[in-house]
Length: 79
Image (cartoon, rainbow, N blue to C red; front, side, top):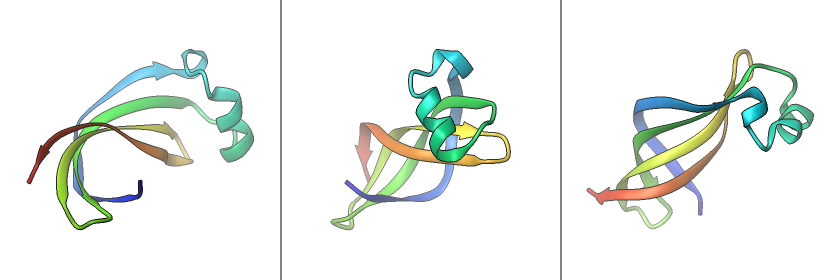
């Protein structure tokens, strides 16, 4: 399912760092070495069908590389 993030991501939290990330080796091979963190936050997204939904998103992030691989974890409310 593809989507577009609308606006800012709020309530950002880090819940895994470096070796606590199961996908660390794959991330380093694909995007490069960095201080990888797995993070989550709340954002409005626009789905393919045009509906706008508030969701909990998860993604990987590293300094100098940026945010990668956004995933929708939960739908919170439809706007």
